[in-house]
Length: 303
Length: 303
Image (cartoon, rainbow over all chains, first blue to last red; front, side, top):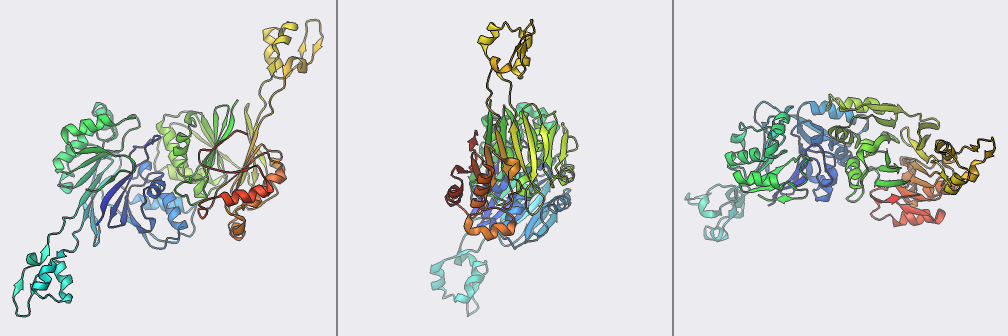
């Protein structure tokens, strides 16, 4: 079962000749979840083979242009492709007004509904929950209200041991119940514990997205033990003053959060255009958190 | 002196994995003039080395999203790059309201002024005139008010013949006047005609941009004898019914306009996503107007 993240853009607000604006796409069992949508996101989604028809949920961290200017074009393309099913957008409550007002100049008749979900920027909350996944948002600290997100894959059905099926003469009608984790009760009333009948499941994976934000430890409890942490590192440690002024993080600060969270892996991104090469930022982060990689367009990570 | 056009996007409203949205950039003596600005235009401008600091004028044919969704991001990048000088946008009068309203959500303080020039969509008009260039707009026929543009390079200064400078003992103070085309009057009152003193200038080049439009012969007089004509060909001749319904043109219709205009060269573009390969469209156009080429991202044409 797939659980993988593709980086669509690694740049901060000013893109460069090889860095696109912020967007990540998470593939969970071939359902696609988009996080942020900078200008050009629809081109990157096509390039890296995300299925438009299986993309129904967009999570927006905050309403700065470099995180949302791709929405009008993506919505237009959905419409031209004949989309009929609902599109869910999770964002600051203002996005609904801004986007509706803007789009009304261009579309009198979208073929599909956009359902806006207003985020709470003061505390954490579960914002999405289905059979595959839960998504929780939590406050970050930026110049305007901003959320981070953590995506947690749900455990799937257990694998049944075929030798036990035969041994206990388990009828077909009982299989789903056992795969869900229940014990098997024999016709004579004897209980066969589920652990005797099934193999351990792979634990569900998790992925946290933290951008844009000043250094903030408050959200560490929400992302504890995350498998993959994306944390912005707009600046190198040398430019920490600029990071502070603009409510962004340095490479070492991103790494500190990864360490405090006990994350398994860290991806840094949202790089300022001033760094042609981000090796220095990766080196700074690795001193604190060795399993750090720089975001690069098209990079696919399976935690 | 440079006079060249670079195609930034060749797609109609739904982009594909290798076709960007509509935008062309005209380089006139290292000054850059942008025509239309679909999503992603700022990436293409960077890729094809247009100088942001020398791009002061943007001409918008009409207010469909695929021709303007790149404006917010481009304006944001201009701002982040520290632009101070005015940006002129020539477009339907509604653009000012739409863009101001949208941008007010993101920028409280642009460093530069945007000067909006409202186009007249009922008749032709000179909309720009400086030492380099004149630009004239003329009505096209689309689902909403739409203009075409013709860019005409002005003739530069003439080259002076050095042998004549010496022969007539022309003082330095007279050189500029002669380069501008004036005769030289000797101290004794004798007139030396300009044609004896200078070499012929290269004629100024011209480039017309006609998209989006149904087949329309009305504007042919405005683009008569143009050096380079870009005309949309959203559809092949087989899809002429669809072209009619959507107020677009077929390949043969574009070629007809080129022939009637006595254009020297035709570029067709704004291709529907239904054509993976546009060879058929080029073949159809060439039957009527042999010097036809398909627009491709990055193609640079010097008429």
